[in-house]
Length: 144
Image (cartoon, rainbow, N blue to C red; front, top):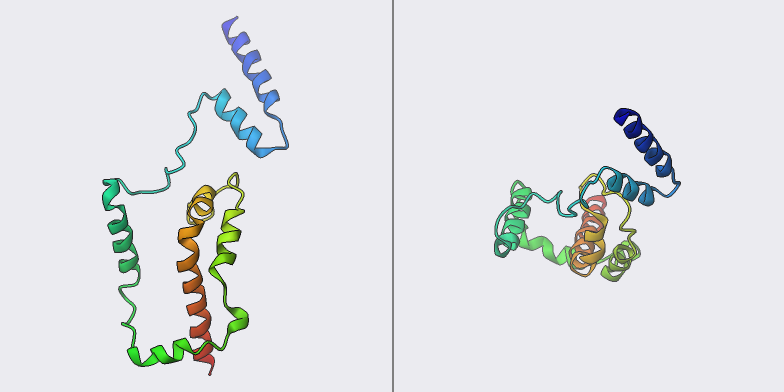
């Protein structure tokens, strides 16, 4: 009798899960399985004290670029000569795009949650615009 009641109970719960709205489906699934809300920071691997987070991030990016040659100061004049004004990205454009990110979408291959991009848009827009614009200038210098 208990097995039959359990089967009936879960069958009705599964039928209730049908919804074209994926967000609602996941909310109902988590509720049915009695799962806690997922930790939005679960994809971040940092386990140290919060005060050292900036230093950890700095070390990570320094390691990523450690194989690159040092910047030759003689080419800096060429980098300032911006001939690609049509292809440059303004940081405000990036910030606006990130600010309108749908936080209910799944993270991309980088594992960053959408809310992270939205909430940190003011801090990410300036460096990302600089990286993109420098890439455009580099391609322009190589093609000349």
